[in-house]
Image 1 (cartoon, rainbow, N blue to C red):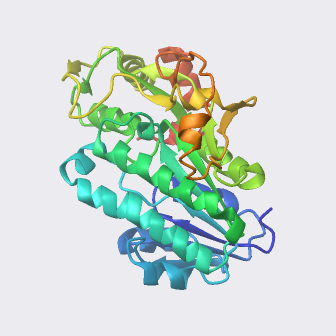
Image 2: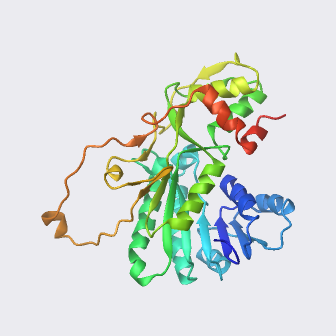
Length: 336
């Protein structure tokens, strides 16, 4: 799949980009381009990777020209660049618009001009029935991608989306928060003990991206079948792993624009999904803007529940511990 191919990762110095890079460096890629705007992170990543087929480009998806030049002769693009912190986006919503929506539009257009073969874009469960600026911007990002996917007749590039829940070990995940608090001898801050989140590892996130690259058709959205856990169970797992089962917990209440439960698939999306062993696929929307069909044609709707974090398999603290211990990178977080 990667032999003699050239790849580019936007946001390549983030949690996903670094883990993905470590995995594909073992493949026979002709070139891997890390595209990001963080000079310090690029320096650190370059210092740890001396491979000749690795190239670093400083740029921003908000800037069309920097993207266009970086995409020359690239085969596959993986779009991980985003503003993804809910509080930051809530207070600076236009910055989320500029990166998550307009930046994605820029990337798609520049990929099309450079005749990229396939583009895989990373999204989030917060794009499903969004209530905050980050989720709204990611929902619009998905709409922008699907809109471009409809133009397949005039463009040879395929575009797919992968949609995730909480990726354990990624920047900003609740696991990092709890680990830092327990190391600093601070109470573990829990918003609501009943709050649930989908959980997956970075390796699982990468596997989903690779599946989308391998079998994804234009406009499809890939969703991992994931277990979930409430925040108290995650906190208890962290306390046990550090040998501090009685470490104090402080309940702080739900934060600004935060859901009690998240959904990976809405009720509407559940109407048309394709089910596989480890994931779902939402087919590409190939409808055109034929207004007459809105009045003359319809489809009977099934009453289905959304795929939400309170309606899936819920992990106990011991099951979360096993998930962590089975993953080398997650285990390393608990050392020192």
